[in-house]
Length: 213
Image (cartoon, rainbow, N blue to C red):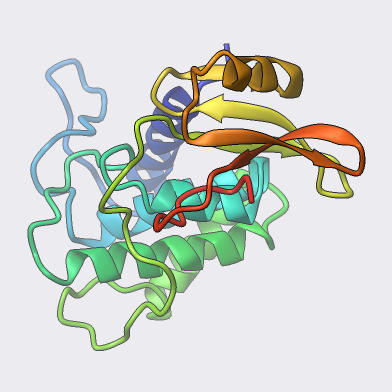
């Protein structure tokens, strides 16, 4: 079953294997496998590559807008990094954006990995918490609503077809989402008639947190 969270972990593990094989050795467990939660993998080159690679893969597999939203959900996309430093957010969001850039350029994940290694060596990625470059886009979400649904598939004309409930880890077709809204299961969303067709949209409030429009 599709799960954004599970894919995230698969992507991380894939990246760590390639880093260990061709970039530098990573900490291992007693059985010889890479330990993704070992100390020393945060706020450094490995952390930088992870942020960029995960964001890039979501761009490749789904869309740049979906990757951008997911990259700003700190609670969901945090592995072993505490992000206690004031500049950690800037560094992470900067590197997410670089990842999305290369996610649009790479033909496959191995090529993506090579492009990001090159970007790291060329200084395009931020690896120093005191780097003066500032990310100008939207920041981490500080308030996440009770229900949080994002679009994971749409038509070429922009019609939303498939949705994912981030908290319930549930895929919803358009008809299923509409029915759930009508039952009151998603209070932050409403149904509007667009071009004569029922369409789920988010309620307007102070939070610009999703991609439903």
